[in-house]
Each structure stands twice: as structure tokens, then as C-alpha cells.
Amino acid sequence: MRTKHWAAPLVAAATALMCHAAQAQMQMVVEATAKDVIGSRLAFAVKERGRTSAGFKLVGTREDALFRMSLVTLDDKGGYFTVYSAVFSAWQPQTGTWTYLDNLVGTCGTCGTSRIAECADSLVASADQVAEEPRAFYRAYFSKEGRR
Image (cartoon, rainbow, N blue to C red; front, side, top):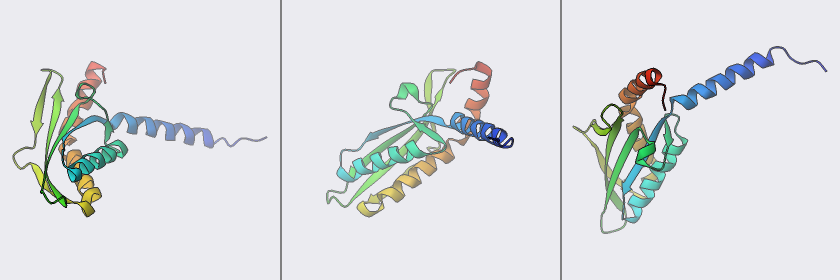
């Protein structure tokens, strides 16, 4: 049986690209205070979007994360929409503290029952945009330190 000599380099290149993509993902935790029904559904959808994101790897605890989204929701008392606020922060390995990012404008809004997926996509996209600077910092920092 003849083997294709061109297949091995393609498989090696694809494997290298997948490993590079996995390394490019930043560990993110989503902490949510969502006691209302719509807010709970929004928090769940944000976590699901984070889990499938190319830029993030969803982790369960703050101790395992480099990036954090804190999501707070409030019920409209009618059960049709929620008011949300999201705050982003990044772990500072030199000081062992969290630093808040891009909070001059903040990310807040309303989300109704028919727009949960759209709101979750928007929040994860905002997180990805805010995370660009920390992501570059971590690449440089951990390449020197040889960790995470």
C-alpha cells in the first residue's frame, strides 16, 4: 500500500496550529449574581459562549483564571427582561491581585427573554476586546516565567 508523502507534513502543521490555538486561549471565570430568571439564563448563556470561545477557556474558579467577568443582574419585576452590568478584571501575577479593566464606560444594558443569545454573544465579544491587552501581557510574562 502506498502512502501519500504529502499527508504527514499537513497533519503535523494542523496539529501545530491546534496546539497554538489552545495555548492562545486565556483562562476566564464568569462570576454571576443573577437571582432573577432571565439573569440566570443570561449568565448560563455567557458561560456557554465562553466555553466555546476561541479566545477563552472557561474555568470554574477564580484561582484557575487569568481573566474574570463579574456579572450582576436585576429583575424588572415583570419577568420579561433583566438589567445587567458586567465588570472585567485581570489577574496581576506580580502583585497577586485583580485589576479592573475598562470600567470608565462599563458594560451594562437590558436583555429580554427573546434576546438572551444575542446579549451573551455581545458580552463575550466585549470581554474578548477588553482582554487583548492582558492577553499580550500574559504571553510576554509567561514566556519569560515558563508558567501557565
